[in-house]
Structures are given as C-alpha cells and as structure tokens.
Length: 302
Figure 1 (cartoon, one colour):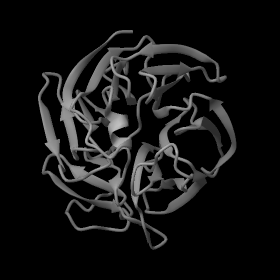
Figure 2 (cartoon, rainbow, N blue to C red):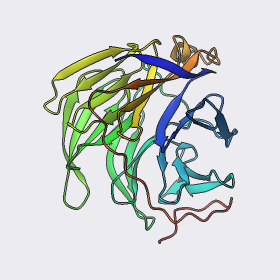
Figure 3 (spheres, one colour):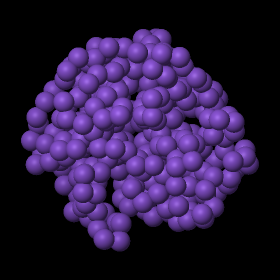
Figure 4 (tube, one colour):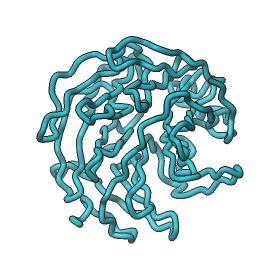
C-alpha cells in the first residue's frame, strides 16, 4: 500500500472524515476545519475552534465535530455554526476528542482534558459517552486514561476504543446500547484514531511509530504499513467503493513540540492511499440542528 500527500504545510492534523468526493480534516493547533476536494482545493471553516479531534457527517449535510467546550456543528453551505452539546448534567465539558456515529442517528464521543495529556502525568479521568438524537446522554465508560479513536464491528455488536498510552480495547454492545466485557484487543500503546474495514479488520493509527496497523477480529496483528511521518494521528475510509484510505499526521516533530508546549513546525500532511479491503461505510448522524449560532445544551428532538 502506497501513500502520497494530498495536503501539507499544517502543524498537526486530525479528524479525517470522507464526505462524498471531499474529505474533512482539522488542525487542532492552528484551529478550524478544512475540506479538501479532488482537485486539491481546500475550504476553511471555524478558524478559531481549537482541539478538534473527531468529526461526523449529519444527514442534512452539516458536520458535527468535537473540540474545546464540547460538541459543535457547522453548516458548510451557509458557514453558520453553533454548539450541539456543551455540558453534561450541568457540568461544562472541557473538551471532546474523537467521535463516531452510533448507527442509530446519534454518536459516541470521548471527553478530553482541558490541556493535552502528557505520558508522565498522573492519570486524569476521561470518559466515553453516547449522545442520542433526542439529546439524551449516556455515560458508557468512565475512568479512561485518554479516550481516543472509536469504531464499530461490521455487525455493530462490538465497539473498539483506543485508550492512548494503553492500547485498543473491545467492548460488547448490549441490546440496550450499553457496553460490557471490556477486553484488551491490541497492546499497541501509541494508538490514536482507528477505522474498521468490511472484514472486521481494525486499522489503528500509531502516533509514535510512523505507521498504521491492521488487527484481525481475533486480535491478531495482520499488517503494518509505514507512513512518511513519525506522528500518525488518525485515518478514515472513503470514496465510491470505500477503498480510499486517508491518513492524518503530525509530521516528525509535532508531538514532541506539543509536549514541550511549543507550536509544531508546519510539516503535518494528509495522505491518501488505496486499500485492498474496503472500509465500512461510515453512518451519518441525524441531529435536528438549530441552524443558528446560539449555543444549546443538546440537539432538539426531531
């Protein structure tokens, strides 16, 4: 599998999400969302929003994304944006990292720290939640070191979660949508974003190893693919056949710079390759968005 850079010159890229012919991605350091088209043209949105680590496509063409203070939304046709969720049980959300649609119109999201977690710091609490289309929030798992990449198995019965600095964990999805039977699925500790293919293979971005790996449903490592950057942050499938694989990176020095509190050099790139096994089609969310810029505690019911 070969990759080529299709967008470069950024500090630290995250949140890739295919949207028809276009691909969304973020720069959590510089701020904002970008959308790149097949001809290389890049649109920029919400430039002041930092720490966007995950994105999802809403049924009406809007995009839902994480970042500082919670979940937000953007209507790219009008450039209007607003908050989807900024508090849980009355407590403000410091930040939301990665997100993934739950296949029922809602989404999974992992809370994040107010500042990036460093490996030598005492563990802080993050959690995995689910937001339903009616605004109901369910705490699925608490006490996580760093809640990161999220994905579902082809049958929807297993949820995968990357807990950075620890590994990839698998959970059984119960009939009522809760999680049980947490098990270590992959011991690759530098795990960041993830994506699942149609055979159930779990692709994991490795933020210190300069590679993506594929892990079979039984937990056995299957493939290791080197990327032309040390800090590999996330990935997603896209294209008409879901065989286009997009990978975001932080360049070779991005993570080191962030850990030192310095702006990373602008060497981060978005890469494109072609996968032999198609990815799973990513579900859309189905939130009824207010379509104005006024903050709201949660999406209104449809």
